[in-house]
Length: 110
Length: 114
Image 1: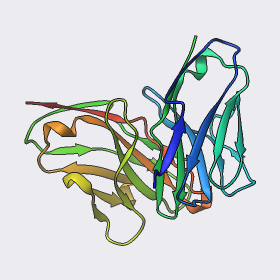
Image 2: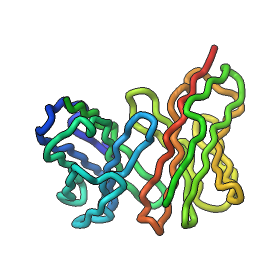
Image 3: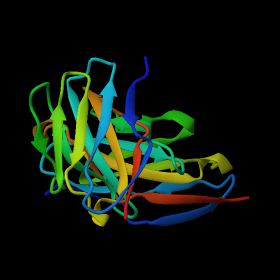
C-alpha cells in the first residue's frame, strides 16, 4: 500500500515547454486534488476531482489542465510553462475526515 | 470567501518551553479544521483534526488544539517543545458545503533554540 505517489520528484522546464505531473493513489478514494505550494502562501487548490469522470477548478486553475484518467490516477498538465508556475505541487486523495498527501513534485521553470 | 489566517510567519522558542501557534478562520459553513506539519523538503503530515464534539483535540507528537467557535480560532499548543519540532506548521479548514476542499493558512515556521 503505497498511498499517494507522484512523479517526477523534480523537474526543470524552459518557458513554453509542456509537461504532465502524474499522481496515483491505491486507496480506492473517490476524491483527488492538486495543490501548489509557494513560500508565504501555504497551499492553494488548483483543480480537484470529486469522483472519477469529474473535475472542477480550484482557486488557481489558470495555466493548468487536469485529467482524471480513472479512479486511481489524476494528472496535472502544464501546456506552456511559465516562470510563475515554479512551485512545489502536491497531489492528495480524500476519504471523509482526512486528506492524504503525496510527497510533492518540485518544478522549476526557467 | 473562505480564508485562514496564521498571524505569525516565524516563531522561535527555546527547547522545553511551551508553544502556541495561532490560527483564525473565516468560513461561511460549519468548518472542520486541521493542523499539518511539514519538515524541509518533505510532504505534509497530519497532526490533528477537529470535526465535532469535544473542542479540545489531541494529536500526535504531544500536540493539542482547541476549537473556539466564538473566536473563530483553532490554536495549536504543545507544553514542552523538542528540537525535532522545528518545522513549518499549516492550519487548514474545509467543509462539506464547499466540496471538502481545504483552504490553508500561509504557515508558521517554528525555530527551536537549544
